[in-house]
Length: 231
Image 1 (cartoon, helix red, strand yellow):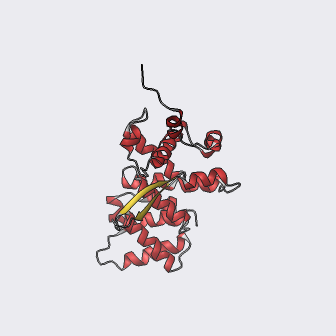
Image 2 (tube, rainbow, N blue to C red):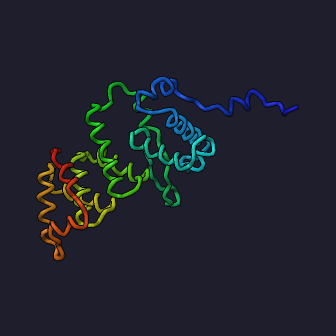
Image 3 (cartoon, rainbow, N blue to C red):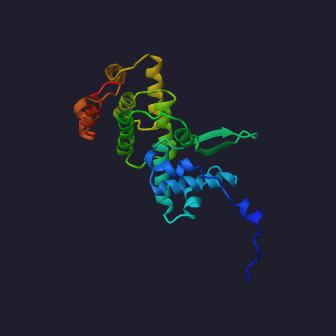
């Protein structure tokens, strides 16, 4: 006969799940797999693990760790959670998943952005993945969300900065971030201003290649289609 488990032990092993989450998760464009991953992250947090790995999460799911990584990226892209960084008392950098964006969406009335704008912003992520030739990491997705939300960079300017990084053969997030900060410092607000600034900068490079040479290496015609819309 199995050992008796006290009622107190049972209570101690409970987690609180908001009813609003179970009732309205589909309205947040979330599927059942994403919901369960969020609940697992919530559970890990109550147990003192604020940054479980995809492997740790997948141990309690029916999906692989690779699929779990995709779900984590999707949740960050949808702004349902973020990755926060802070230093502990020993000045060691720690990361943690924060579900605050999820709770804010669930418990704040009429805060959602217009659907048209959200879809336009979401188009940024496939463009970045296309140029980098791989899925974006959760940190990279969070960086793009910071550009959009905290730094209030327009989607069009972010795409323009990506274009400049490709043209300069410096395809990395630090370089793109540097471009955006420089444009903000100079008061550049439109794609046309960004185009002109990029043009002037490249003309000042000693080893500047011609446009035809650039096209032989890489077809960049797609970028000009991106930039048809102003910010």
